[in-house]
Length: 215
Image 1: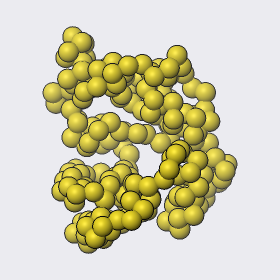
Image 2 (image 1 turned 90 degrees about the vertical axis):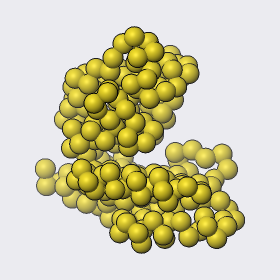
Image 3 (image 1 turned 45 degrees about the horizontal axis):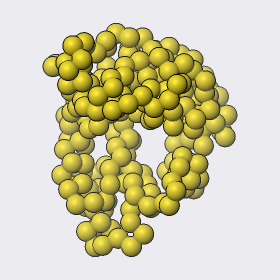
């Protein structure tokens, strides 16, 4: 969507963990998907500067492997991408309170990068608690929240699933950006096409396009 509007898009997965390396070019599958969607050819060490081959939080994975997360290299690569591209999409890892070091969480990394956040949630049971906790943590630390996207709404949702986005929006006063339905053989093209019809997303992209022209 962004590329179609001639916005030069960068992506980043600062931290990733997995039980195995995804491919020769990308250690993390998430990075591979993001790079393909943005159609960029940056080397993996820039897009994903920290990777541990253990499916755990960065802190736990680092301690198991007797190493540590290098936050300086994460910041360095982010600043490089930020300068090179008009817009850089940064994907988190797990939840907002995932520990990166003993004194530094994903929440702290978002603050350090000076980024606004889009929260991706789901309509399933338990989402109200998890999503409100995330929203409250962001509000308390003054991280700007663009809104919430609810992913994989069932084709035939029950009453609880259908009401969950409305309840969260009412209780937090944070806008629901989109409710993405469950899709067979889902991929980034299908999701992009669906979101591209969303008025809020269209306005967001329009604002980025105007900013780009002004810059």
